[in-house]
Image (cartoon, rainbow, N blue to C red; front, side):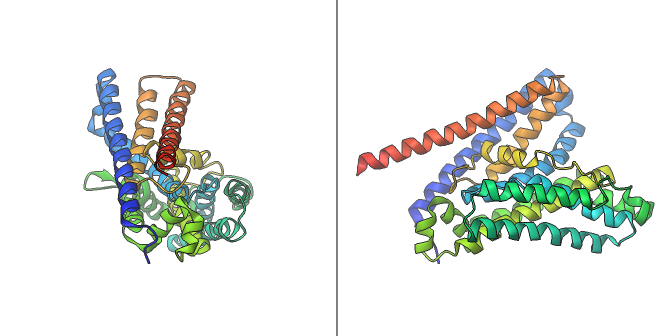
Length: 338
């Protein structure tokens, strides 16, 4: 059952596509500007490294964007990333087969997705408070996984050959000349993009973000839909944890710090509204690219970390401000027509 009329869906699509195109244009402009400052930035080696690095931001951006579209937020993303890395790495470093370790870590991450969905969708806790609580809990599990210390090398338990294969699959290896980390992130992005654009679940996610009461009257199960959104976020965090474990060859208790905010940044830079109901994941792809290019380019030209954070913070704030102004303008027009 469709919960949005055709005109409304068309407006959302047009607005989201426009914001995404602006994001992609900004990405290209940033690459060209930094390329003029330092031609090494445009070298294929750096571009490939940039794509590999942005895979983490793309995945947390996808997870956070889906939550933002529902009108909620997920502050537990970074901690779930750490939990994924620590649980899987602890098991593997102690000799547990890779598949078993990954399934245990996946179950733990999805459990947090369900808890978030129950707290926000069923008990109506403010998402900021609910996911703040699960953020601390997930980070606590990450610390406890290996007795409050980082893990040994994954190869310690699996052997060098299997350990190297794990790292190659999730981070260092290439397929068709592009790092696997990016392919993994892009495939997940494509699947979630399809879910959001072509399935009833996607329509329901947009519906509850646009007007939760109207969605209920249209037959949308808000609890189920909210839980599905948080499960998508938890799954994306799980994969990012594996990418970080593959990169380091071990688990780090501090992995994923601030990644929940990186996810917000990737989404809003690409036009996903933090107020819910609008935005395309295509824009999140552009937003992740803008974020990583800024970080990469400012680092290469020697800008202090403080300057990097200020620039990115201003861009995120500006993107949200534009969204708020646009919505206020649209609301004023509706009132004028009435």
